[in-house]
Image (cartoon, rainbow, N blue to C red):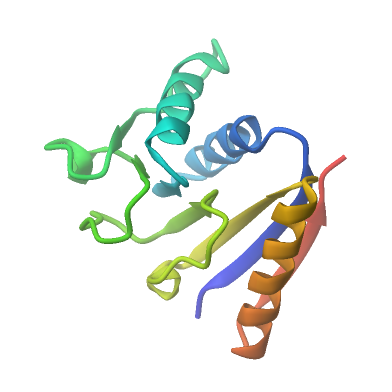
Length: 139
């Protein structure tokens, strides 16, 4: 069963996601980042290359010919075929349709009221279905 970790009150969701990716890669995890749209994915792509001079976080978009060999996949579509289902970082603001395929999922929730409300709805959804949940409030 998918383990789901909520991280709330996050001031910058994309920068926070990059730190999560760095930590997950240090643990040899393969990660899928689900963004809300192409613009967000472009920002995330740029941040993954530039947020840390000491870390190399190889990543490609889903559907890229190198996706099967790349540990970090970026997508804004759930219809695309994914090469791995280890860790999902959800930035989309929605409940991912196929989240149960993953071993672990991170829900990143900002301090924005609409994002908090949507996050609470997703938390309730997962809890009602018996998924193991944890919650961390970012400082």
